[in-house]
Amino acid sequence: MAETKIKLPRSSYEELCKIIKAYGRLDKPGSLDQVNALAGVGKTTVSANNSFLTSIGLIKGGKAKAATAPGKKLAHALEHDISQDIEAGWRAVVEGNEFLRKMALALKIRKTMEESTFVSHIAYSAGETKSTFAKTGARAVIDVLRCSGFIREEDGRLSSREIPDRSDTDTDSVVVSQTRHGESTTTKAPQPATAPVSGNVAINIDIRIDAKPDDIPALGRSLKAMLKDLESQDDDGSRNA
Image 1 (cartoon, rainbow, N blue to C red):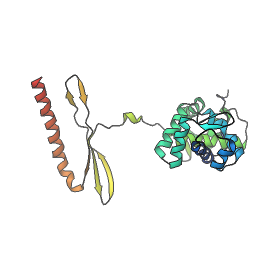
Image 2: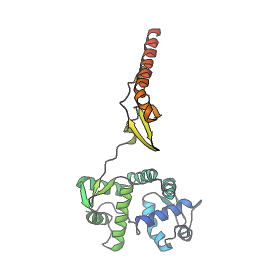
Image 3: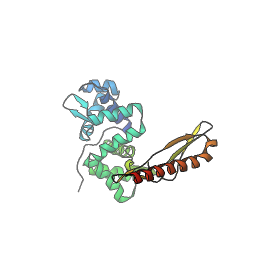
Image 4: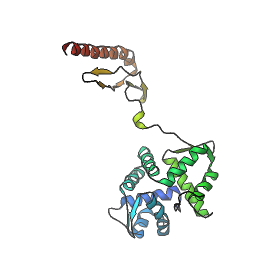
């Protein structure tokens, strides 16, 4: 049985982005003519994609439509080509849409698929008839999933991509930035000890140090001295408590 039905895009991912950016430029709901003038893709193309953009929560309205708050945010990221914000914007779209979530999950369950097979699966799941438009729309959906970071392509095959929660990244460590000949590299040092304070509260200290190569040997001694000083302050605090 087919999955939850949705009207797929009728254009490539690139044209879809042009339409999203056009809606993002509007200060108030606009007509097809206004959006077409800003997107430059043709009025019928804008109209054919409005159903998909509405269903995924990027635009809203009746005859005159406007970008939603998430649509504005994504449009702004696309306008300035900020890859991190583009990924975050599409990721929010996928997470908020049942059909797109199911397509990402389908690939995760199968582990890997050829693009042509996934195209057919998306078109079938959307309840679309077998047509060139359906294939184009399915490929646009794959590009959306790819840009959201949920899937990746490797050796001509698509696979699910696990993305760690940014809140789980290790920030409680000493980071030493070394600059040499104008190039910057970042190295994470071992995580420093947590300095306990009264009230059963712990403070995690994140220190970022910009240093020249010649300064690196002395950093270890400086960091040890700093930690020793923190420990001695804690001991004084315990004695005075």
